[in-house]
Structure formats: C-alpha cells, structure tokens
Length: 333
Ligand code: NAD
Image 1 (cartoon, rainbow, N blue to C red):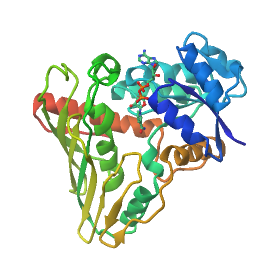
Image 2: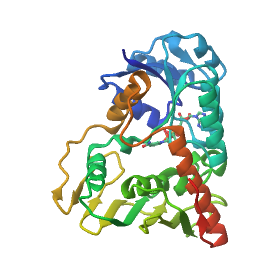
Image 3: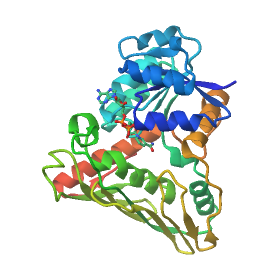
C-alpha cells in the first residue's frame, strides 16, 4: 500500500515536497489544503489531485470522513504548526509537520501529547535524517572510526531577502535565524556527536535592527556541552551566504561536510576519503522512509518523531534564554 498524503500550506516548501513525491515508491500525493482557491486549482492540474480531496482552512475537518487520506503534511509558517497538528490529530489522521515543529518546547509537548492521545503518528520533516552521506558519517562514528568524539562545529545561514516575509515576523516565525536555519546546527550537533547536550551558552549579535526586529534574531553563536566532554560550537545567521558546513572531530578521525544540510548534493569527506554515496532528492527519500514508518512500523536510523523535535525545541528555548542572561543554561533532554 501507498501512504496517501495531503499537503497543508501550498507555498514554496509544499511545492518542493509535492514535486519530490512524484518519484516516491511508497508515498503518493492525493490531497491539498489551502486558503487560496487558485492554488488548489493549480495543484489539481499539476499533481492530479481530485477536487474531492481539496479543502480550505474552514472545511478541512471533513478530512475526518475521507478514507483516501492517511496523513496531512503541514508546510505552513511556524506559528501555525501547533494548532494545525493538534487539529489534524483530532481528525484521526497521522501528521507530518515541518521544522521547527513549534515555537517552544511547551507547545511541542502539547502536540506530542495530542497525537499520542489520538493514536496517530507525529513525524517532523527532518530530511537530513535520511540522507545517505549523513547516515554514513553516523555509521562510521558508531563503528568507532573517528575514535572518541571531541568537537563538532555547525555553521548554518543564508542572507535573507524580502523584509516583509513571514520569516522576519516574530508572530509567524517565533524568532529569527535560529528557528529557521540554526535548528539544523542544533539537530546536527545531536546526530553528529551522538549524545544529548547537557548545557548551552549563547551570544546574539544584530547589525540591522530595522530588518531584524525585537525577537527576530539575525545571528546567534551558541556552544553545547555533552556528557562525554565533547563540545559543539555553532553559528546561525540570516546575514551570510555560503554558510552550510559541519565538522566533526574525534581522537582518531574527522568528517567534514559542505554543503551539509542544503538540498544538496551534500559533499563531504572523512579522514578515510571522499563520501561517495549517490545523491537522491532528500524529500523523495524522506517521504518513502516516512511511509515505511507509518505503514510498516519501521524504525528510522535517527528518530524523526515529535519527541525528537521537542528536544530541539528545549535547546532553542535554552539558547534564547542564554542570549538574554549571558549565563550557561543547563539542559535536561
Ligand atoms: P512559504 O511562505 O513559501 O509557504 C507558506 C505557505 O503557508 C504559503 O503558501 C502561505 O500562503 C501559507 N499560509 C497559510 N496560512 C498562512 C498565514 N496565516 N500566514 C502566512 N502564510 C500562510 O514558506 P515555506 O518556505 O514553504 O516554509 C513553510 C514551512 O516549511 C516553515 O515551517 C519552514 O520552516 C519549513 N521549511 C522546511 C524546509 C526543510 O528543508 N525541511 C525548507 C523550507 C521551509
């Protein structure tokens, strides 16, 4: 059987996922939810979605009675995820939600609880967790090929354009670069080091307070400490291009990836040589893997569930706290 997916929020990422799903073997786009009738018409034509599987934000509770839709994939702005995930769960449908899953850990936990209560899967669009070169680095680390892990560096950023976009609106984005792109360094720290951090320190800098208003971070540097003694040093920014780099250093070896989390192809090498796993469209691999999780009960190599996302949100909460207080914040994941 195929996982039958409806996408909510037909913007730039929703379109990317829809295009990528054309090549999926286990997942199929069958429905759409949008507030814009012309987008629904367009998607019916582009992706062969039947009219009866199209909804708007007022009508989508009827999905409850639509046996042709298994899961709703939410690709709306960050601040909407919480209520939409909880509503979809209440309709008895599985949910895939884009990152950041919510604006803070409290919201995230409410979403996890709601999905648990409704007995539906809650998965988060962490596409790197299925990417072949990333998984090879994780395999090598687990096999001890880098020795004891000492250090991780994650640099994630891009120069953001249009100042009127929702990503620069605190109400819709919940923050700035950290919510959007810095989250890759947070999540990457965890899957590259292979431990959960126990403390965080962070510093914020802002060069353009007009573009980056109160509560919208432009650049944050943060450091994480891990139980083994390993440390991570990360940079999240909305004002530098060509910043997509991971570096993992162990006592016996290293891995470096650049680009490390962009749409790819990911490029990288270790002390043993180039990473040569072939590139596949991340969202295609992700959706086939998520079909395996939802329909066949498969366990992904790195978890992508709501609990996993709450850990990242706890770190985000702590980083914002540390930027304000200047103090080291303890973490309990
Ligand atoms: P976008 O602005 O291109 O699309 C957002 C869509 O939501 C638009 O179609 C918009 O019309 C719709 N929308 C519904 N209600 C809205 C409201 N009240 N206000 C504003 N827009 C509303 O944004 P995007 O780049 O597609 O990002 C969407 C989500 O996907 C974000 O959470 C983002 O972090 C995530 N994302 C993830 C990745 C990834 O690689 N995993 C990449 C890009 C974006």
